[in-house]
Length: 217
Image 1 (cartoon, rainbow, N blue to C red):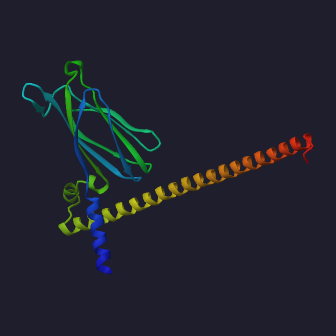
Image 2 (image 1 turned 90 degrees about the vertical axis):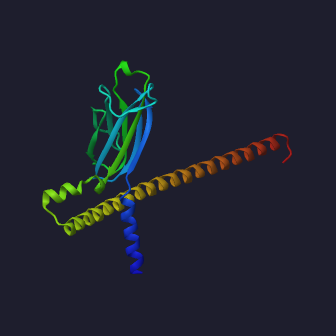
Image 3 (image 1 turned 180 degrees about the horizontal axis):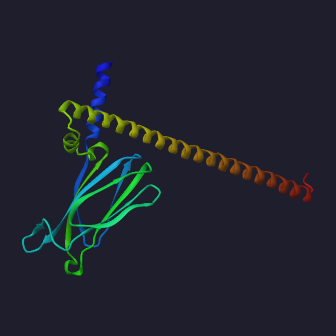
């Protein structure tokens, strides 16, 4: 049983070590947005690099003067956490305040000289302890290898705690939504039943009046 617990813990640590790294193509001026589920009080680092397609060589140029990237980050309440223009390659950092879905949108601010060209954007999103430069931490705090590893494990445990808290928050929201939906369904069913009973009663009264008028009863 203890072995299972340890294996599960390391599996969870391994899962938390995964970061989002990808690249995508966009036209200049096109807007691309990504959604990240982020707990509160969590540091997020976004590394990106923009490359311009060169029709003469048939490839992408690693860096082009005049091309920048406008980055906008919104929290779950649709509040803008940051919105500014960066260079064609760089790093963006922000810390979440509200747990939930954060929207990261990017688009080029290129001039008309590049109009119609295709861009390739390399994107790497690191959340939580992945956003910490432990080499710099070890150098700054003069930590030994063992002390650094303990620091990493403590940060991972802290991140797991925040993830669990966020999952409980999501479960509570889902429960409230389910209860609200069930309550509405119940009231709608009662309303339908009431309408059917009313229609049936009206039909019976109408038929009774009809039969009495015809002197059938």
